[in-house]
Amino acid sequence: MLVHVHQYRHDDAKETVRSGGDVDPDHDTEEYFDADDLAADEGWERTTYDGQTILRRAVSYDDVAAISVPQRDLEETSDDLPGEDLQLRRGGGIETLERTRIVEVIDEDP
Image 1 (cartoon, rainbow, N blue to C red):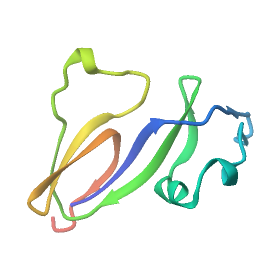
Image 2 (image 1 turned 90 degrees about the vertical axis):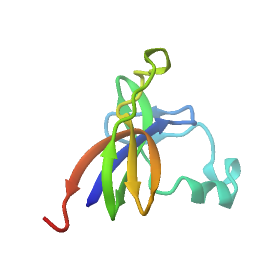
Image 3 (image 1 turned 180 degrees about the vertical axis):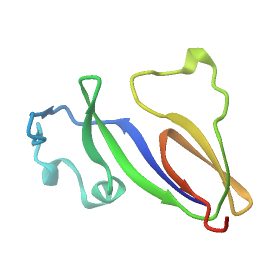
Image 4 (image 1 turned 90 degrees about the horizontal axis):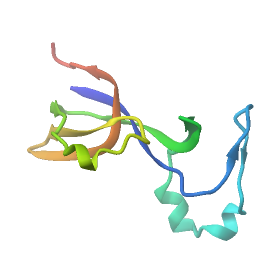
């Protein structure tokens, strides 16, 4: 199967998102990060959720055999980010994705 998801995480920068979607950073990115740090955040975009700025990225996984939602302890649950933890079984291994929402699942060989 082909699986498209959105992953979420907290935004590390203290900034304000204005109504037009413009971001007002509190630092100069080139001075704050070195080149290696910038590469690690590729694909993340800022969005608002429950009045806070968070990061979201779209990711696709192919050759997925199964998707499961592992049971979590209610004390560990954090409701300040959207999504759930997912496990994808692919290529003989299991990949765990934190704070993820499924966008679409396509069976390539129905």
